[in-house]
Amino acid sequence: MSIQWFPGHMNVARREAAKTMEAIDVIVEVLDARMPEASSNPMITELRLSRQRPCLKVLNKADLADPTVTQAWLNVYNREPGVNAVALSGNRAGQAAKVPGLCQPLAPHRNSITKPLRMLIMGIPNVGKSTLMNTLLKRRLATVGNEPAVTKGQQRHILNDRMTLIDSPGLLWPKIKHPVVGLLLATIHAIGANAVVDEEIAEFLATTLRARYPALLTARYGFEVDGLDGAGVLEAIATKRGCLRKGKGGELDREKAARILLTEYRNGTLGRTSLETPDTREALDYSISTFN
Ligand SMILES: Nc1nc2c(ncn2[C@@H]2O[C@H](COP(=O)(O)OP(=O)(O)OP(=O)(O)O)[C@@H](O)[C@H]2O)c(=O)[nH]1
Ligand SMILES: [Mg+2]
Image (cartoon, rainbow, N blue to C red; front, side):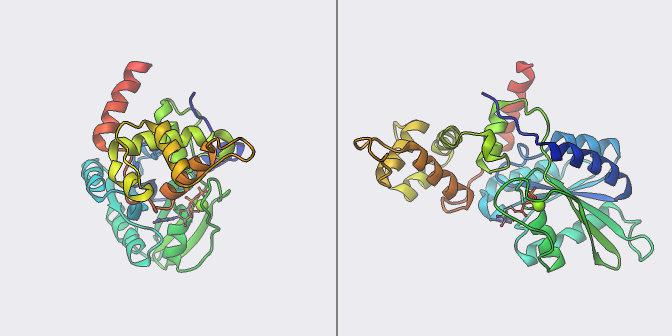
């Protein structure tokens, strides 16, 4: 099954973004540091390349990602022409403050009161765009929340007399080609809950964590993962946490275990993990190219 989620407001948001892009200087593309490529919207890349706008890629929520993998991604992105990349946590003032200084060299001619630097924050849902904007403005101007599609329209703000900032709604793309990308996006809650089944997403997450970070699962839940597959990991969590279905004679409640794993992964309780590396992405791209 492949996951698709493209609610109506995103079509409007896409058209609005294309128009706004004509009147801005730098795109601040917010990505999730735990899966920078999976969380990079090809539609945004296409728009920015066609308008020839430079881009600061912010690998956000770096506090939740594996630092070694994040560094590998920065090396990849910083080689791209017209792109600067940085890893940070947009909810921390000292880190967010780096953003304007990294955007400025991408549009050096825009640095005056008459020609302020105009930055447009873009990205998929729930990656932390509005949080970054609020932190930079030192005010809670935009609503934020740990669910996708909180922001529904663009918001423009003056950062200082030489810089402006626009927040925009999270954008997905109409057809997510590879099922793994849909699953990855669901684990970080970039896709609406109505489009996914928690148990399926949690089983995918358990399989990935089992392969890449088995010690974190053991440390958190207190069982050895040897010999377990994703479904086995979920059952072991259900057992350890006493998740039983009511009136079902002691049957394990896999759905409850799924929600525990997803919540603890999403809020970082499980530890710092990266579910995508430049190498796993290369393998995925290869399989996509042979798929189609
Ligand atoms: N751990 C961590 N959480 C963050 C960070 N930045 C944002 N968050 C959390 O991520 C969630 C989503 O943040 P938002 O700022 O609403 O995300 P958004 O990209 O504006 O989302 P939409 O408007 O729905 O597209 C919130 O629960 C934030 O508290 C960060 O750097 N680290
Ligand atoms: Mg928002």
